[in-house]
Length: 313
Picture (cartoon, rainbow, N blue to C red):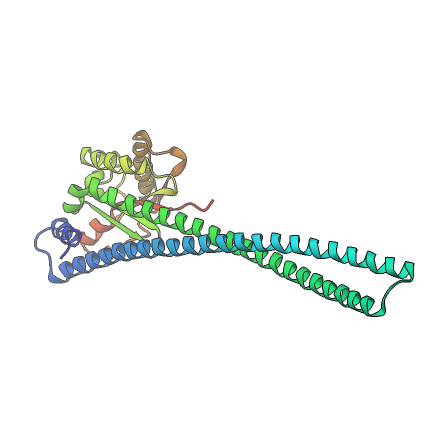
């Protein structure tokens, strides 16, 4: 079992009260395997993208060389065509001179006419070769541009993949103690990185002021998120379905979850997260992760999730 899987299994064991059932333990192991597989898939994709980028660069260098050779050939053909045209003008002048003086020899004239025709044919063939060379150079330029654009895209994808993996690794490293204690769970799937923080370390029951342990944990999270600029950060507050007690300073669970999310956002901003890159969302009891029919289920649903998603603009 890898270190990361052992960490997740230990997190589940420490999160629940009393003894943990075999099914819950096996679920934790399965979650660890899934996270391990996601990381391995990202690393394999990263290596494949690097190899693909190298192949594209080699193709691009080859095409650049071929384009240079064709350019030299085109210049040579243009010089040859110019010489042929000069010869053609010279021969045409000689034929006209012979005709004008009436001294043209029939055989000589026929020979000269044949030479003129041959030169004209060579000139036409050279022009056709020049046109074909120009077309091929245009194709190579287009292919070179396409390969360059593809290489740029792969570099951008590689950098994005490295940034995603770095954010995940940095959060896991910063919050190792809380993860092992079962207070925080970190997942990354399809570009969506989620930091799930149990409200047990953030808030007292029915309150929205942060506890000391929660403040320390969120400061660690802010230390990583302050350098994240390519993804939007959304803080989501969640509660169980217990009815709000009479006299509470808020109307319902929805309001409580929004106040808790706003409190977390305020601390993150205070600790260096860009204000325009983070927002608070209260979702009340309407997105439970498990049924609320047991104390353990209710505890799992009382949570705050810090979600990183790709920016749309």
